[in-house]
Structures are given as structure tokens and as C-alpha cells.
Length: 212
Image (cartoon, rainbow, N blue to C red; front, side, top):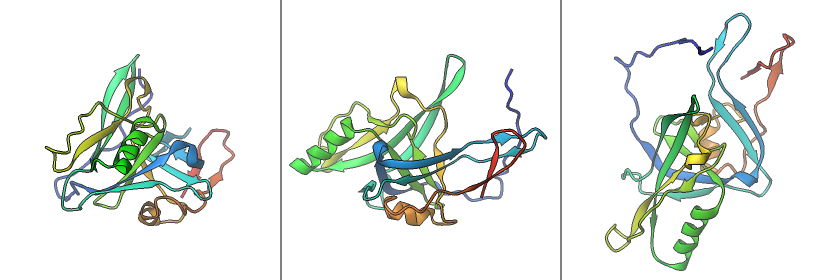
């Protein structure tokens, strides 16, 4: 029996939702992360439910994410996740698509790094939300065909969770250490992230604490 109950619904009848990602991806080396704070939904002893699905992180001094930018009129950059059940537990495959162009040495080095490095991805939805994909176990290039002569000079490449490294959580929402600074941090490739949000620990002998 699950210990999780339904707590809320959603009324989308009168709302208008964004339907596209900004055509930019920031990839971050996992080894460049100095500090991280992850907060997921929780329920206290009084059955008070708190809905949070967020991540905050700082990089080591001098480190930065690496931006891949496509024309904002296109739809080459997008992200998605899918759920499967492994040994009775839900697991999530994270996928981010980005375009790569060219055949020169620099392009081949970029593809080589995408194939072998350990990284996660940040994308920004048109409503301003910054999402983090593949933080726990990273992303890898799926099998691909690179055919620049027939694909407008390049190819679309999917970065996904691997089968033996699916994520335990859905993509997190990035929260800056400065309220409302998420877009600024994203635009700075997370190279100047402020200190992590601080929490007020309580004394009720559980693991819950308040994050602004």
C-alpha cells in the first residue's frame, strides 16, 4: 500500500499555458557542483502537506555551465520525461534534445564531450521556469546518426538517462538563492550563483524544515 495520498487537483479550463521551451540548453559538469540542496514533497506529523520539487546548487569558483543556443523561432530544443516501473518503484527517464551543426574540429570535439562527459541539463520553459534534467545520474547521448548533408548542416541529438541509471525523481525546478533570480542564474550559465537558500530548522524531531 502506498503511503502517498492525492492532495490536490488541477483546473486548466480557464488557464493558458506555455507550450514551448526557450531554444537554449545549459549543460553543467556534475563534478563542477560545489553545493546542492534538493527538496521534495513532504508530510509532517499533523498531516500537513508541503508541495516542493526544487533544486538549488552552486558551482565551484571559476566553473560555468556550457550553453547551446538555437534560433528562438525554431522548436529544436525541448525536454521531456517518461515513467516506467522497476522492481515496484517508479523510475523516470529524462530526455533533452538539442541541435548540433557543422563538421569542423570544434564540432567533433563538442560531440565527443557530449558522448563521454558526466553532466546534467538546465532548460527554461516560456513561462520562465528553469528545469533541471538528469541531475542524479546524468545524461548521455542516445544512439544517433550525424548527417549534416541532409539535415540542414547538422543533426538533432537526444541526451537521455541510460537504462541502468534512470532518475528516482522527476525533473527538478531550479530555485535561486536570491528570490526571483532564476532567469539571471540561467542566463549566467550558473557561474555566479548566490549562496543556497537557507532553512529554519524546527525541533519536532523529524527531517522537515522550512525553505523560503
